[in-house]
Amino acid sequence: MKYHDGSTILLGDIVTVPVPEGTAKARIVMLGDSYEHLDIEEQFLIWVKTDKILQESSVVIEWVSSNPFAHSDPQYAPVGNYMFTAVDEWLTKNA
Image (cartoon, rainbow, N blue to C red; front, side):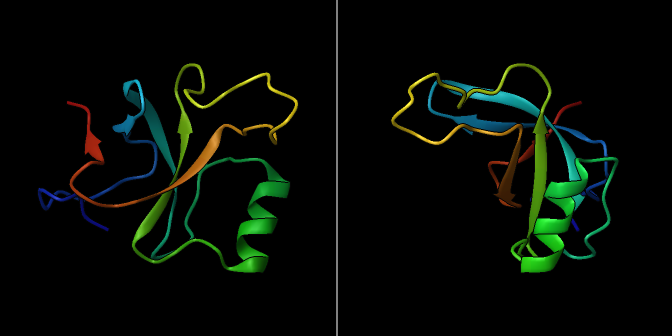
């Protein structure tokens, strides 16, 4: 897999992604083209592999610090620390 600039995406890369408040940092933990992954929660991994929900052109990221989508509103489902995101011009590797 490649970033928009042509460089190779590697597991463990720290990336910046856009969020409503600006940007947030995350770590690449799974690649969509190979399903190669780092040490991630077993139940999450089973779900992703069983349901084949990770697109070939996407990755799974894990938030480095606090989850920018976390909330305490009981009206909505809780938010996990993993997120699927497309590999596009908005996913940038930190230098």
